[in-house]
Image: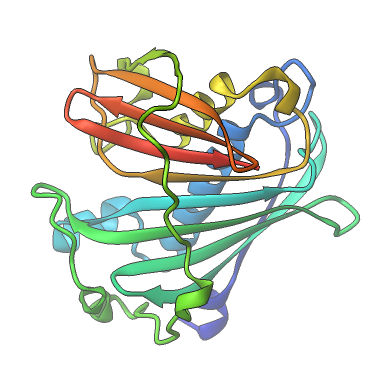
Length: 242
């Protein structure tokens, strides 16, 4: 595989009708699904897609956090281009960006995602060096000040509601797909925040399985709308919208 293949992957598509909401704009959860699929397509080109890596090593990539700066959401049937670049590693986490462009080449969504490699059965996180045999081990080290930081979400935020987890929410690993948390965030933010330019970060902290219920607490604090979701095992996710 060539360095160019590793450094960037690009895809173009029209925003489908089933991914837009009442405003006729791309839904946030759908944007996260496009991020996830773009990453998987790039890994597939590099022969380390989900099934390939699982079969060869028993390892899979788990998403740890996602941050998206939304300049504007594209509309139904609008042509967009998504470009993704592996950016490097920080500790055990791998950084990858996703940049959404409109038909005139203007940046409209700028996202960053961190992942780890883990054993699919035990969920034990692996050292980044396990990727060396696959030829995609990143040498670039993300500077500490450029890494995605966790944020504190108080436990005493007001109770906002519950979200049951159904079979259709699950991914190939058997827990709620990370993009569905984007739907949860969308459902629990105040109406006055919808459709505005913002930055959203979601930290995925604990798997949530079928039949579980996310208990969501949310509220404004220090200029951010903070959210935390707990399942029967404990904290599942935190989110910040600003």
